[in-house]
Amino acid sequence: MSKNHIFLGELGEGVAVQLLKEQGYKIWKRNYKTKLGEIDIIAKDKDTVCFIEVKTRHSDKFGSPEESISESKQKKIARVALLFLKEMNLLDKKARFDVVSVVYSKGEPQLDLIKNAFELGATFAY
Image (cartoon, rainbow, N blue to C red; front, side):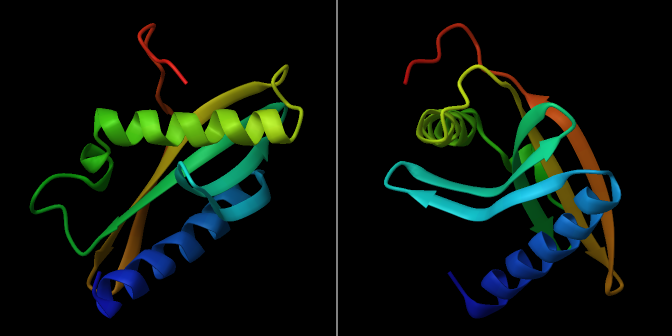
């Protein structure tokens, strides 16, 4: 991964955190990593644990950032989320998957918060 790509991702996560805080989210963790994968941001929105994927692009020329979250990526995020819930003894809490889409247009970020961006189908297995 190039340094520019990493920098863009970190920049996107930074503005995403600011947006989430403005929306009333309480940030618990950033870049939660396990052997199963990583979740960009874990936060609480009222009584719900939110697992947030941040996708940042320079443009939407090849589709919106959120469209790049494949089904396999969703399953990977879900496995990591389940592990987090187990570790923190939060399996009885409501949880959802949100996405923050960040597109930098002329140097300014255009952000879109998508609550409940995806759900796990009945075929999901840990």
